[in-house]
Image (cartoon, rainbow, N blue to C red; front, side, top):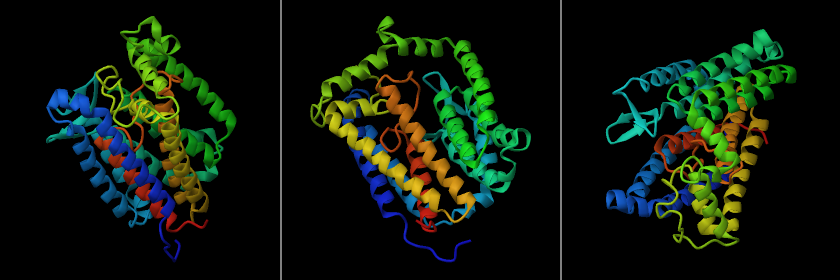
Length: 366
């Protein structure tokens, strides 16, 4: 254990708070029309997001001062609690059904999404397992299978909700962590083939997933149905041009793009702030990932390195999927854009994860 703490990564703090501030502005801009129509309050979503942001920032600065070895000690307890929550959310009357998915547990006027908590819990647990068993990672039976067994168990429970997007981020993050730990490429190839077969089964088992695939290939085949969101998203991005229509001047938020403050907030941002604004957001994410990678490389022990790699990978994968969906490069799936999209569980957990990363940076040698 290192003997000396240093100051946390200042650039990481500035980048995170910059993304958060931009997100608060865009949540208000994207949601004002819908909020006024539905709740007679243009600030309805913005006020809730500010509350989530406040809680998240407090959590980030608190966690920044909690030694990251704490998560190693409590990792098993945390992941057991998350599995219990994944079971509870499937129980009618406990889990809240939204848009066909039972992914939330109501807590008063708010709700929590257990699958979001499972992502960070799985990172902490897997970092502990890999740091203690790295010598076995080249063995398929002793290393790879035990590493990913719990991951795919959690994935199966998340798919019962169903929530393919969150499950994909969790599995993708775990795969990156195991790969960094030194697993064999041949083992990944075998699991990749099995994963493709499983993914094909998931798509074929649910007609709406097949519709998303076909609408991705040709959204105009069903412009008022499965292709609607993608078409409206591209209609938002296209007119934005280089400089955008101006903050607050989006046209697609006028009931064309459904709930634009959520998964498709990047489309509204590109429409209002243009190519320059969209590029700035991607640049900020790139800076965040760069600082995270430096922290992982300089971490004083394997656990800290794997924990940092997991957090950075989770954010990177989520950004790539969200932006890919919004720009028509990937099929539509429900993934929020970190720090920008509306959502309490997602925003709070992302800020908490950055807090862990900041604590590792206090011991990191870089």
